[in-house]
Amino acid sequence: MRTFQTQTSRSKVCPRNQYYECVARYSAATAERKRFYQDVSISQSEGGLYEINLDQRKLKTPGGKLFTVPNEALAIAVATEWDAQRDTLKFYTMHLTTLCNTALDNPTQRSKEQMITAALKFLETDTICYRVDEPHGLVELQRNEWDPVLQWIEKRYNVTIGSSASILGPEIPEATKDTLRQHLKSHNFWSLTGLEYVITQLKSIVLSLGMIDRHLSVEQAVLLSRLEEEYQIRRWGNVEWAHDYDMYELRARTAAGALFVHLTSESSTVKHKLLQD
Amino acid sequence: MPGSTPLQSQHRSKMAALSSPLRVCRGILKELRAIQGPSYKKSLAYNYIMDQFRKNKVTGEKYCRAKQEAHHASHTYLCLLASTRNHLVLHNLYHGKGERSPEEVAGLVGLRLPTQPGGKGWEK
Image (cartoon, rainbow over all chains, first blue to last red; front, side, top):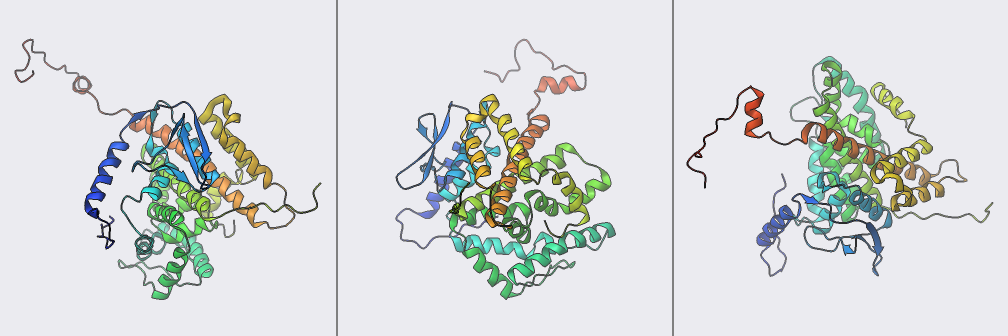
């Protein structure tokens, strides 16, 4: 649960009122609506930002701002989400749109530092680092599947994390936290929104960084995050309306978060070599 | 992907067929067709995806980082489209029906709600 921290800015509006106003507007905006548009298209404004058009109207965030994204790929993906809606608008399937709205509105008014601190808090109870003592099959499974990822991240970022079976979890040295904090700081605000979302979904910084750094695919990261559930499924059987449902939802959210981070943090250029055939 | 463990290899063998760029491209196009119907070739997403796949097809270097990044991104997008669709299917199948009315609930155990011709007294 995120705590609301009072701002020390010199804004004339009381921050608390603004927060509640935003929340009220959000709940009204996300009630069930029918599809009210035929065509979805994108357009580019003078600032180089992309906007989404539903028929002739420009899409706005729940907070009332104009919906703008920094690059074309993200705009197309969001437009596809809106185009995929049939009779009613199912906002819980439009993960990229939701992420963009969060980044644009920032309804809980958080700064980069607050987000980084919240993300690093996950390290102390990282899924990968929390091991069980029994049953033996699960202990082995955790060792075989999670240890390689731990080794990878320790080597990649030159940090020590380790794992523990005690109730307190592993001791994370300050140097590790500082290194990871520096790395998280290098992301811009949008990218950090996406990254924090992924960390919250997977309940693990290690898995999130592994996926963002392209060491793991989305399916692999989700599998490792749900390792104990997979173990129990193998043992006791699969329940489609619970297990598969949760798995697909987690995959969709994680994939959206990962795509969001990639699209908002890099700029790609194609270098054409002189020799063309 | 380096360092394959037993559980991951099992799942990877399901995914191994998916890991070539051609398969990922086909998968994405399938998903787009499911979303947009027969006119999916006219959509923004289709043009962009085909463009990206063509741009990244030819590269002179043995290990092209941009190509790996594009491949991972395309795989991620395919995962996003497929899992959103599957999640929605399961949602409609199992969780989409809402609550039953009192008449239906009574009917489940073979009872019927009593009718009172004069109304119950508190109705307007």
